[in-house]
Length: 384
Image (cartoon, rainbow, N blue to C red; front, side, top):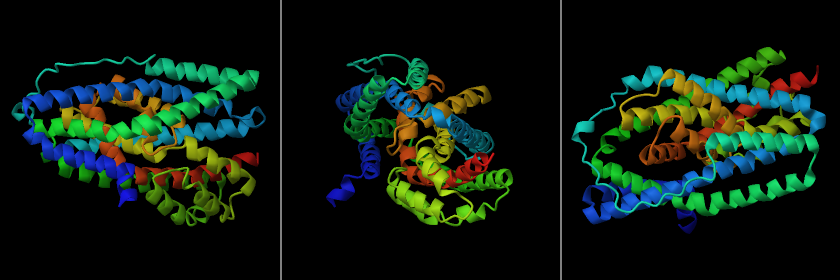
């Protein structure tokens, strides 16, 4: 039982349930407490976002081997194309499906929240795009100059950031989500939308399999090999990812699956499978894009424009490459662009985090299984 309640997903679900239950019974005093709590926790989360980007992106770039730049460069390019391709596929689905989900826009009937009496702002050290640009510049500089002391320094910084993610960000998420759902429940905006979110989760899981079909078809055409000789070995890795919700925890099984394939070279997969497990997050990107569009329709009565979604997907693909290897790492790394590009407030961010977490295991499984298709492409590329 103790192990069950230590699970992050279980904690997030408890936060949702408690928030939904207490929301309708909030008094003015409790509303003020919850409003202030939500704001402070949200400020802490957004403060950490640029640090997460800087720590992980710099360390990832600095680890690249200049002697293998051709294969590495090809791997990064196809991982990015796969991720943004999944994002554009998802956004296309969103524009065509979400308007028909019968989402009630009953803004007029919502209760109004009181003005916050206590507000503590914690501005980030720098903005999201500044953090990303700085990380790219420093990472490339370390790679070119082969500065080992600076590389070790940023490795230590990444370890510190990961510690902050595990000991600060992840523990406060259930309370942040509970506060948001309590306020949404008080307003009355969430209860009627629960069937919509369950439908959305099912749509996204089906979309994962469609995108995997697209990836393996493209890999088969490019490599002139039968992609079935790869994907048929991946069910154990897929199920492991569903159970663990972690690319790192699924890595051993993914390597075993890849090594069983007769069309993949072990010397290639020993590099690509661990590498793609960190940078190829097509399932997570697909999920997040569809979810943010749904959340925008539910909370803000409109879907973001086509131009906004194009910018969001292109940036999300970059952020996914440097996302931390923890459950929900993609959405955590992209909180800054969810707020800045899409204009989400605390309620929108919390709702996105929650429904993302509820199916994160399937997104991870899609990521891991898709790595086999990309490894088939790299195998063909290495033969040139």
